[in-house]
Length: 310
Image 1 (cartoon, helix red, strand yellow):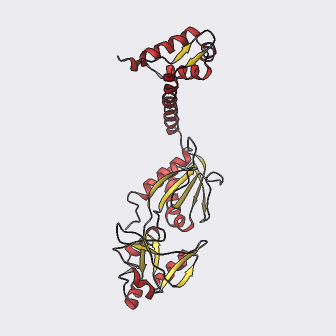
Image 2 (image 1 turned 45 degrees about the horizontal axis):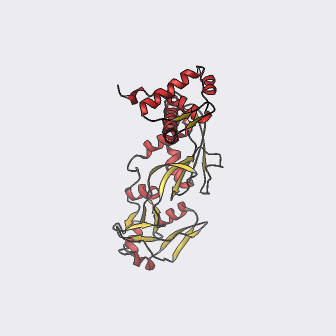
Image 3 (image 1 turned 180 degrees about the vertical axis):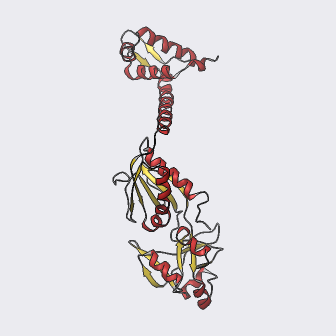
């Protein structure tokens, strides 16, 4: 048996207590053992490591440089063990009580709400509160356990589980293509009828690039602008014009033939930075079992690749 195999979690806990309190007697009282036993644990630990961890004299017990170094690793081992114990113990529990889910309006209607019946069937003791909004949500302030969001992940005040990337596609109805023809180059868009989403930050900008090249903004004059994606989609389905929408919004219409993809050899977007679909939650040490359950469930529902991608 090597020296390192004699180091156990109890020895690390006692070492950490001695480091923090710098007194064998105080640690002994807290641990319910004698001061000589505490001293023996530290001595055995030093033998196992081959390093002196404390300077000892009649007035004080002072950490050595090795002691200062070892405390970081000792605390990490104890912390990892506590995390593992917490996670394993929660596996014994059944998700129950209220879980508050927040999602963008149209994404929530199309991809969150339809899967809730199966979630309820799987976890009948889970009470679900679903709020759909496109407003900015602060996971540290708003009363939500799981927030589905689409965009660039930049804020370190929350943790995120990324489901995948959002891709955009330029599409129109077969009737529009028959009347006005296909778009073969992004520069042709100036001659076409474009339907553009216009939110709180103004009309979407349309960007295109060939693979591995830089994004280029192609200004278009909209035939119609709207802050309602569903209205724009309806107009496109009726042959009114071309839309640039994310895959999760239009994939079923493309698969059914109601919409035709244009410029398939170009990447398209309304942003130059990557857009991810993710579930975010407050940056807490132990997310609730309800939050983890919901996120794990939608990882399975969405699949890999995401079921709506084409």
